[in-house]
Length: 534
Image (cartoon, rainbow, N blue to C red; front, side, top):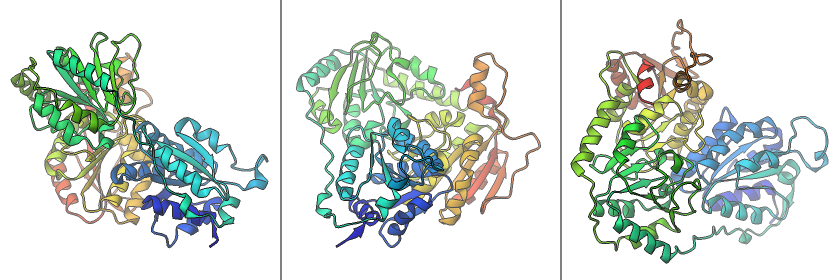
């Protein structure tokens, strides 16, 4: 039976398990939008194409299926690159569709037309143009590439005349089968075991690859058996229980020098699923400390550092193989680690008379359900969240770290609530990220998603201000709101609750979490504590 190519694309996406496609319509993708109408895929209209990429990214993280986003040509395509780049450096499988003018207009001087494939080439694993007669095969290859290690986005240019054209393609040609990882090197594993058994102060470092490896149980069993101290990257929060005595802290975040001080005795780093895209080894591992790098790809490191032992393959299989190692007799002191945790917490929560960011974060953690999802935008507050936000399971803290893009928090929260409607969702954003994506508040209102948006408003770009001060510069170009700013009562249909004390913040959050509509808590905080934290 003949179908137009837009219908064939939608059929392939349905067969892949796609539930949502985020994007913005245009004249050249009208046929695609029409094909989505009546399908099992819900088209989610955004207010900015960057949000479409962010939302597709989060959808993929939470569902395990490729995310999908759509833009029109030209400025729509350029806008969407910000979200697609996030998926590229945060290792998320995604299909990014851009509309394009038909063949008669190719190579012509015409409004809005640029080379999308050149635009997307640096931020995707593959870029291709869809063609009649090859839709299923191209999408099969796209899904395979997007989901193969390391996962990431694929760009698909969809010309208007190709979308309109009909074809009798056989769907039997569509059977995505991403390549499996090759078996790990047994010799490399034996070398790793020798290094582990020889070490007196082995330190475990956990990274974002573990999130998609499904190896949480094996990871925790390995750590618990040997009573090993653990540091984590920001995106791996939740892989290791923080309430116990083995979690040291998050590297590269608030009070990082205290975490580094505890790690000084380490004579071996056992890096499990550690992706340097979050924080390079050179930033925190001394040159003479050997690294056992257990991941799906080899280690990226400076040549001046000690050669790591690479054990590359399925992380679950590698950890299972390591379970045969007899219980280690190392020299780490459990009581010293508990004392370190106590002092770190104390340093992160200093006594302050004025309502400060850590007051809000501590209150959020106390009042927000453990099974809820927090999305955090990029900014000074994220450094505090990294250390203070106790994360009980993977996928409960969603951040942009490889790409580190401001503007992530609001669309991420909307996508999370859409995908997991039964879980409470909380977004924590600073002034800058809020203003970048404030239009998406209307998306939450339109979709009737009861997300609580916490705006930590300090009227400046605090992270940049701190960095300016460290360089001996005066704050310049970082003020967002003037001293005469007055909060609005609503933003695009969502109610705004202004607060400026810890007590009023706690009360507002309690009420908001019980509500059935999106709410913005405008929390005016004193940012001065950031200067001693970051």
